[in-house]
Image 1 (cartoon, rainbow, N blue to C red):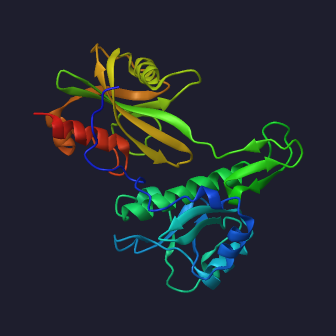
Image 2: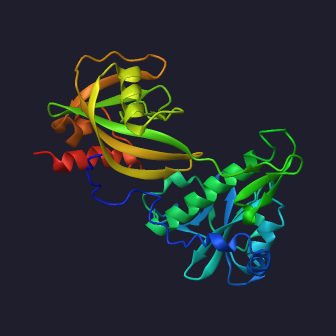
Image 3: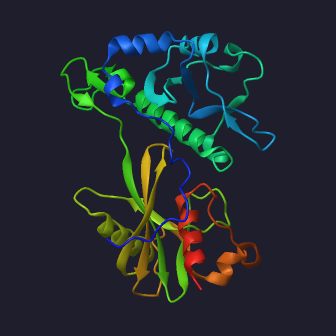
Length: 309
C-alpha cells in the first residue's frame, strides 16, 4: 500500500516504556517490584488520570511511589504491570472503588483529570503512559467474568491477561481497530458532523470500526459509502494512534473520492460537506471548527493541507 507520511508523531504514541513482557510471568520479580520504593504507579480513578498543573495550562503526570502508592493500592482495585521506564518498574492501579481518592494521597498531588482534555499539552511520553494505564484498567474493570462460561476470571501475567477459574479460558486486553479517513477530491476534502459530537460546530473526518473478514482498505470504502454515499478509489495509509477511549486503535488514511454528490446516512451523520483548503485554513471565518488537536483526525487534515499547494 502506498504511504502518505505523517509530519510528526500522533498523541499517545512514542511510549518511553520497555513493556518487558518476559517479566510478566516472573511472580517473584513482580512481587519484589510491587514493594520497591522506586517503583512508579499510574493511578486511574473512574477513567481519569492523576495530574497536576492542569489549571495553569501546564499539566504533568503524577506517578506515585512508596507510601502514596501503597495507599492507592489499598483501595483494592485491579493493577497491572506496564513496563520499565528507565529501568524503573511502572504499574497501573485502579482506585475507582474509593469515593474520593485524593484524601489517600499527600497534599499537592494534583487531581484526577480526563486525559483527552490535556493530552495535547502533556509531554508525549507521559501522555502515552497514562493512555496505556487508562486502557488497560478499563479492560480489567469490565472483563471480570468469562465470555465463554460466565464464571469469574482471575488475573494472570501481572494483570495483562485474565483466566477463567472454571473453564480455564484465557482472555487478553481488547483493542478494537477503527479506520479513520480524509477523503479528498479536486482540491477539497470531505468532513462530516456527527450527532455524537459535543461541539455543535465541529466537522471531522469519517471513521468506523473494521468488521470481521474485512481488509482495512475495504473498511475505508464501505464506511465512506455508508455514511456519505461517496465512492472511494485509492486508499493511502498515513499513521495510527492508540485511542483508549475506551479501547480502540485508530488507523488513519487519505482516500481518493471518485464521486461528488453526498448522500448522508441520517443515523450516522447530521451533515457532511466538501471543504476547500481556504476554508480549512480559516474555519472560524466560515462558521465551523476542526477536531481537537490531539486527534489523528486533525493530523490527517493538517498534513493534507501542508502537502497541498
